[in-house]
Image (cartoon, rainbow, N blue to C red; front, side, top):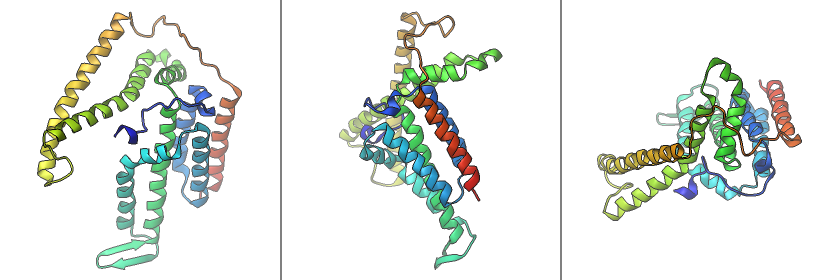
Length: 265
């Protein structure tokens, strides 16, 4: 399970994306999440896919690792694809068998929405694969720093988001251990009636929640013992430095935004 999980993991390899400022990568992800919805035809999706491919190449993350990371969400992408195919009744009729009808617009929307979903997962995963949780916290806190004028606890919110990302792989590893322990005791998670499968999940969730609360308590105790009292008056050991490559990245996402506006139908 851990080998298939990419979101929330950090892969320490040497790459241009790893060396970039976390603020630039966060801005890139935020902008991409919004502008991907501008894509509505083949040229715009080709442009978005090309940009994603370039980012993936710059990260030096193995392609097999990324493809394997999509497996847990493959069924969700497939469900989205089939949902549009069978329930969108617009355009020319392409295929009909019994009560099943596939229309041109349904096929096109199914492909486009599934591709959009996959691109979003890949781009957001690149952020955590190439950036440490501490760097993400520093980047978020710096970007949201103007909101302190409205008395918002920016440091605490950034820390909470960073800890959440950091503990995703930990919880997945804990789930994998519990599932193996339950399977060794004769529990079946992937076979038998649906009712029995649902019952088998209960012995999995209870120890997972107990373990999560225990980890949260240990983390809080460790932070208090080290004198953590929030972000007020804190200094930083590592200072963020904006370089030319970061400007190029933001300029590239800006150019893609303009091109999407021009190419969209």
